[in-house]
Image (tube, rainbow, N blue to C red):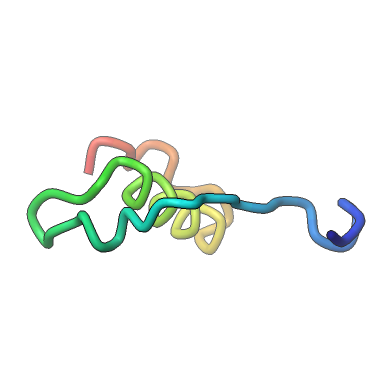
Length: 52
């Protein structure tokens, strides 16, 4: 594990929600992870886009 100042976050998951997702209905864990990644990439500008 890296120190927080070098790598400030982590995700741990034993399940594989991507295998339980479909294009129309994604698993909530997978959708949340993708949404957080998109928000981080956009500099936190997608927080209002939570309904999409």
